[in-house]
Each structure stands twice: as C-alpha cells, then as structure tokens.
Length: 284
Image 1: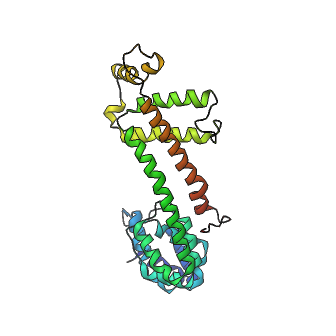
Image 2: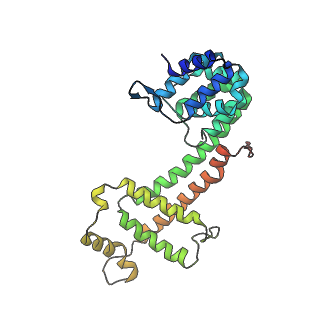
Image 3: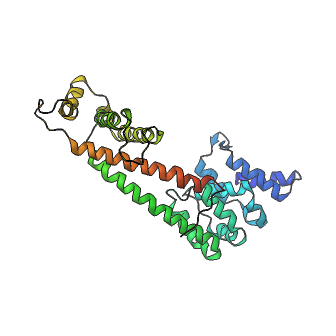
C-alpha cells in the first residue's frame, strides 16, 4: 500500500481534518528522513513516486495548495524528473496558479530546470497568465545561463590540458599581478571583494574534479617539468629557451572573468528569484 496514502488515512481516522492530515503527511514527505518498508529504506525517488501517486492529493480543497508546506512539496516535485503528475498539476494551475509560481521559484527552475517539468509547466500555462509569465521569465534566465556557461566551457577547453598544479601556477600569476598588488583585471572589479577568490576556488575545484587521481599525485620531477614550462619562462625570460605561455595566462584570465560573471549572475539574479519573495521579476 502507498505509505503516504496510508498515513493520511491514519491521521483522518484519529479525528484530524482532511486538510490538516494532508499537511502533516506533506511535512513527513519533506522532512528528509527516509521511511522504511520493513527493513528496506525507501529512496528519495521512491518517496517522490509514492507521495505524488497518493489518492488524497487529488481530493484536497484548492486553497490548501496555497499553504507554505504544499508549495514546498510542489517545489520538490518540480525539482525531480522521475515522477510525473500532469493531471494534478493542471488542476492546481486552474485553482491556485500563484502556488505553482511560488513553487517554480523555490525549486530554482530559473537555474537549469528539469526539462520534463518545464514542459509540463508550459502546458499548464495555458490555464494561467501568471504561470505563462513565469515560464517566459524562466526562459530569459535559462538563455542567460547558457550564454555564460558557453563562455566558461570555451576557456575550459583551452586549459583542459593543464594539471591542477599548473592551474595553480597561473592562478598565482593572476593573484600576484591583480590581487596582491591591489590592481584589478577590470576596472569594475574590486580586488578586496571575495568574489574573485571564490571564482579562483571554483576553477581549482573544477580542475581537481576533472583530473584523474593518477595525475593529481605528482612527483618532484613532474613538478619540476611543469615549473620549467609554465613558470620559469615568466620569471627568467630567455634563460630556459622556452617562450612564456602568455596565451594560457590570458585564457586563464578570461576563464576567471567568465566564472566571476557566472557566480554574480547566480548570486544576484538566480538566488534572488529563487529565495527572495520581496523581489518581483518582470519582463521588459
């Protein structure tokens, strides 16, 4: 039997109203504690499947979907891909479109939305101008994200052959030139702002994540070779016989700028759309 349908029936049998019972069951769904079926722990995808297939959801009064708990439950639905409940979503769109709009924000649909859920939202938008407008706003966010990600991917491809240690070398060049000496790469950058350091951390994390363990553990000989190619030509021009890799240094600076731009886009726009109800986004 469906665990959430069963719990709803138990709550009602104890004398609780149908609406209050639904809220309690939704809170259990959201609490993050995996319930058990015997000795078997139910996975998150199984929890999603059981909750959204529970019969009691289709019988709830429309106003309950405007409650904070049910909006958060809807947000979880929009943030997963395995479960589909288009009929229920259509019903809510017709009666409580504002709840779906809030759920879209809480689910961070503006940041890499789940394609299946976005398709459903566009379909139910036929029943609500509010949802249609939110979908159009999300499209703007998605386009903006993809443009920024393409810029990051372009420069990551140029630097793909560098090891984590070599990325640190170019990061050190940048820090010495633009941070330690108090000079910014661009006039609008404030070298005291932590956003540059966060972006540097993101780039190092990217390189560590995409590099095999065998190449992360480097010997003294490998360190020496990397320094000879990527460090010495800058410090001792002409002595090593190798040209300084200004192309890689400029590519690193471009990648760092792109990462700062992405981080700022997410923190100032995506996060505001997702978490700040006091901010109202409109299309111009």
